[in-house]
Length: 153
Image (tube, rainbow, N blue to C red):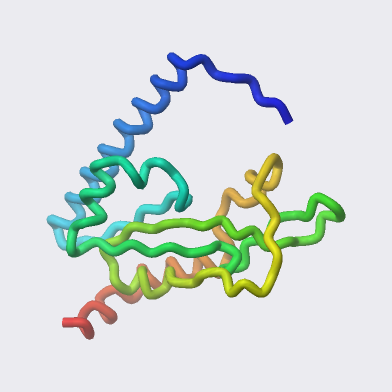
C-alpha cells in the first residue's frame, strides 16, 4: 500500500507537538512520584520517545521501573492474511511505572513456541488494543501495589 508523503515542515511540527505532549506527561508522572502515587506509561518498545532525554531521566529515577513484554505472551492475535484465522502478533511493548507490582504483572516474554505475523496494513489496527489477559494483568498491578510494596519494605 502506498501512503502519501508528508512534507518535512508538517512532520517537524507534528514531532514538536508530540515532544511537548511527552514533556507534559513526564511532568505529571514526576508529580505522581512526589505525591507518593503510581503511574503507568506504555509505548511500543521501538518507539523513539524512549530516547527522549526527559523519558530517559525519568527511567533513571530509583522509584521507577521498566518492564518489557511481548504481547503475544498475553494472547495478542490478529487475522491471518491467508484465511483470517488468528495468528500471534509479538508486538514488543515497554512500560515505565512506579509500581513494583505492575512490573511483576508485566513480565511475560514470547515463549518462542509459535510463529508471528508482521503488523502491517490492517493488522496494525487489529492490534491497536490490549488483549483481555493483558488488561487483567494491568488491573492486578493496579489492585495490588500496596500489598507487594509493603512486603518489600
